[in-house]
Image (tube, rainbow, N blue to C red; front, side):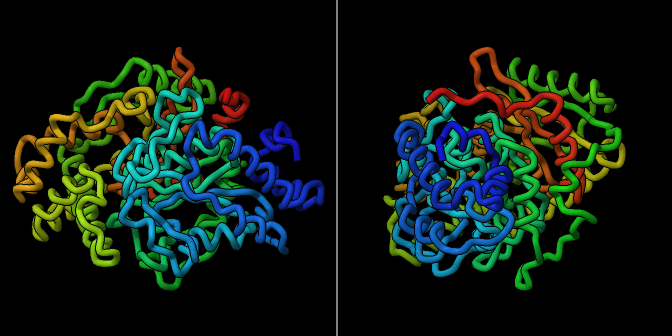
Length: 493
């Protein structure tokens, strides 16, 4: 299949071609592999190609709603049996998965042809994708800028036209941030809807969920149907499913919605003119479509929530380091400095403090639920500023030297109880302070690509929904997509 034809179809469209016999899975795979060969050297999206495995699969009988469609998975918690899942870390490169993770198994059951794993920051702890293990991934719209993180490799691959959709996950914005940076649609499902097993009951204490990045709303909706096709008998939740498939819900015109909008950073940090303009663009579209929009925001202590969020990330990171050291015998030098500093903070928190902070998640969840008693949707920027330049958020050399000295002295963890830690939390979350609320509360949220900066960089806006609001979000996204189509332009690579 010629790439120019391939690039015009989304995943649903490619599956229809295969089902009608107009193209074979092998032909689609070779087109995707050729595109990867052409552009991956420029964007560094795929860190572990799987052409042999994929060609064997494409040659065999395939069934399912996406039979024969090329696909990529994220190199973080999306295990493929017999392949390493490196988690963006030098310490994990040699660990080979013994079983498919539940999302990967469901994608395979749907007939997708997985041919590679995409780049991610070490353990997914950053909103950029510049790991020491895999190198920096670049934004196809401007190679000097980030595609976001932590699903930056998947986002870059989709934006560059290697695949129409790719696997991702989101523990603090890791689907929505790359979607916003790369002009894609990205939905983070609510807590418990997508099974995370069998290696895990839930990810990041329930803050994280698997999903996809895509160019079209209908792809994300149909792939959510794949991920939620049935319950996981060994999982911790039996999440309620809607009365119709998500693909059908996305085709329904939403009822008149009441939308609360805020462009104020919940942690008091600056919000760029472009981010405000992106929201203003969305507001005009919503009003034109007949929805009610007014300024409103949840009554949540954003600074305290940010501190509690980072405490969870630090504790989870400390546990991950301990696990990998035990399994691989890795020493400290095999982990990035920022990762080690975050882990030190996590170890210093202690079990009682971690439990107290986690218990406050209930407060934030109920405060957001109170907001949704009045408003169907919360609209905010996805990012507080346009995609940053590669290297712009790298830890400065003086800070690195101080961090090394504190680790060597064994006192780095003490910083987590100082004003310096709180300042570091705010600085870390300042580029994207809007995304963590949906993770803490377990509510669905999506980034929709409705705006470009004067320099041509994408900058998405975020819509948050109530408990079980995935169908409403998808219907609204499809309505916005129809009113202001975003998939027509392609980056020039």
